[in-house]
Amino acid sequence: MTTHTLKICKKYADAVMSGAKTFEIRKNDRGYKVGDKIVFEVVANEGYYVRAAARHPLNGMVYRIGYILDGFEGLAQKYVALAISKEY
Picture 1 (tube, rainbow, N blue to C red):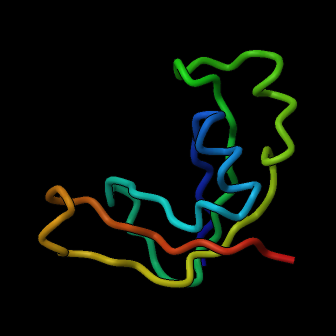
Picture 2 (cartoon, one colour):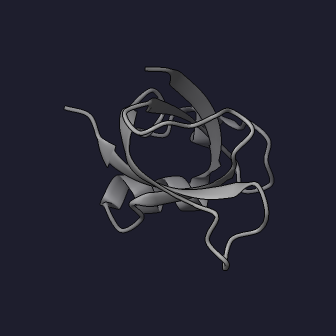
Picture 3 (cartoon, rainbow, N blue to C red):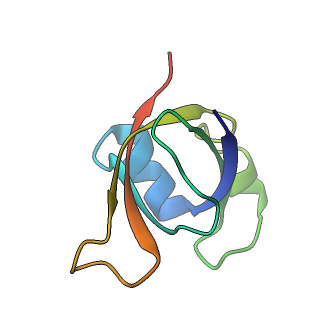
């Protein structure tokens, strides 16, 4: 099992925190596997770290990959959809 640290824009981090967004679309350049963990680092929507994003409550929270959608016609080549859930 691997822990992946991933940057996430604040607008998406808010949706993950509220439970409305339960997936991530990512390039599969890390060899994601079911059971792997994700720790998010929130960045401003422009992609830079700013104070408000650095204090976001999602920072450091651990999520688990429960399912990986791979090779789906609607996804760009080498991209996957990761079903995520919060680790308690």
